[in-house]
Amino acid sequence: MKNTYPFLSSFLLCLFLVFFGSCKTAKQNTRQAKEEIKTGAASKVAKELPSSPLLPAKTDDTKSLLWEISGNGLKKSSYLFGTIHLIAKKDFFMTDLVKDRFSRTSQLALEIDMDDPTMMLKMMTGMMMDGNKSLKDLVSEEDYKLLNSYFEESLGMGLGLFDRMKPILLSTLMLEKSQEEVVSYENVFLEMAQKQKIPIEGLETAEYQLAMLDSIPYEVQAQMLVDGLKEEGGNDDLFAQMVELYKQQDLDALYNITMQEGSEFGEYEGPLLQTRNKNWIPVIDEMSREQPTFFAVGAAHLAGEIGVIQLLKDEGFILTPLK
Image (cartoon, rainbow, N blue to C red):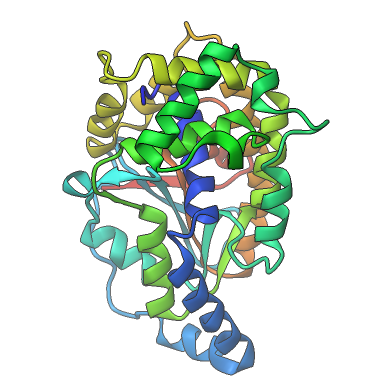
């Protein structure tokens, strides 16, 4: 499927990771770790944080995925890392510097709250269109048949089970199917947190993310779904370009390609990105003051005038790139 809308595809893949189970084992392990911390291991975690010298890092190169959060009254630094939710295994990388700084935190915060016991039920409700709308109401009979054939041939099931699901989420299923062997940075960090026995928190809930999709008219979502299928096999080098920029750790270029104009969907990407960024700042502030935290969110959220890095600076924090 053609990846026409880079930020939204990344945003939806994050939801896919949660709902369709690729984080299931890590989620169970981290919940168990959280219980251990609640029953007395928290002080143990604090004592066992490394006291060895920090691994040296360049601090003058802003082309970095890892940033230190300090100043503004913080007793210990927290860290901010830009992820790409799914990446080909051959392109995945994790530096010793990231591992070192991760080991010096006592909490992991991802975009989504993975510990809400009612999350799956809330997501099931939030995935459906309001007003008994169905995909058949939104696309032509010809396009519906085309989509149904694709699902039958590629996923082994027709659209019957998904007819009332928000069309944009069906795009995620199609995108996931088209990926080669992939790795999730979120899964890797969850496993690292489980090993370190630290809790996992969320900057927002999956329920909230799904609710935000309602700002995009269902008709527009359905058109995205149809366009993505019809353009499959075209000259789609956008995602490859994004991966290359990610490997170069060029946050500004990633942000610019995310916010590129020229698509009917572009008008929704900015508000979705920026609204969430603003919402996260008080949460990051509070978590950082409670304990050193490793924040891992989509890389597109970090750069720009209303990016997480600049918004934290505006609040008085010092953001230092670590390369």
